[in-house]
Length: 437
Image 1 (cartoon, rainbow, N blue to C red):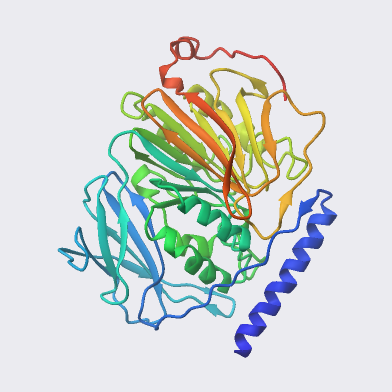
Image 2: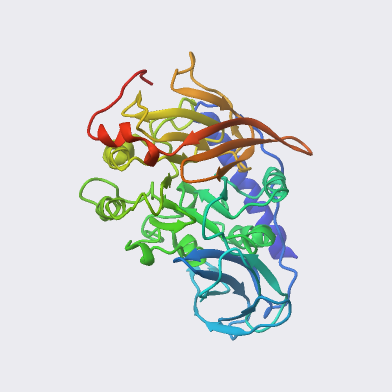
């Protein structure tokens, strides 16, 4: 009990320091709700923090943690409750961070799996049965997009609203646990999201709160993130868990890394060039990208922090006719028109900032005035987004504000895929400019 109380004191002091930092930075934040620390209530051998992620076209990675170092990295699974016709063995890892030692972190890839099918599974040969539904092979498909999630009362509100309606894949453009070097918060986060992340694949990329470096002592970042949340980077030809891509139901999804090298001489830039060149718009007519620090932003918070990456990579996405770009980092919601190089361009991506999942730092309340003609909707409220891709040509994007008890659809727009625009492909290399940011 004393150890638990000490951890809570450290967390509260950290939150106070971060609150003061936001005041010094000069932008206004609405106070978040109370931090939630989800305790460990299972035995040492029982799996906890279970979550799943897509691997290739027909496989799933199952990840979990046990305190028992002798637990096996195996998953039994099948299409009937309590009946496991197939068994797969995977790998395990662990890490130290100062005085903290993680549990045994298991990762097992299972498959091949049938699309749009419910599977029941058990981790490590013991504990509870879990289940998930694989995404559809063809359209329609629905993505939930949530950034800067954290683990507060607002987080639980967001996740409950998300869970109130069916969807196929969860996309998170950075800032997961807000552990910020306090490693027990990674465990708490894993337990908090398990009821959701064990049923629907979560595909994530890193944010600044995943870096967790200390000069000399912990010089290499993303130790906890990479150990706990491996993504299918190898399958997409990437050499880093910090950026990758995957295909699902006629959609190519690109997860970029805002906090690793991205200039024209970097491995990420070279990988992105290669990844975009391989896209077949007849097979995947929709292309969306996610990153953490937004390239376009009219909120007073985090101004210009994504500018270097935009200058390095924006032309690659534009020439590939990427349909949408989602970002987090700014704790508010904002939807832009299609843009290229700070001007409205009907052949550029539609940009959305959705860093309003429930983080412990609160909301970024102040937007620049007068509003930019490129910014079509902006609001500092907690919520989540849904992208329902209906067919090869049309999708519907909606943003759902968190009210105390109900979710409220505050913004929505129909989107036409650029793969269907002959004008954009015929005019490749030419820019259709209108208004400046």
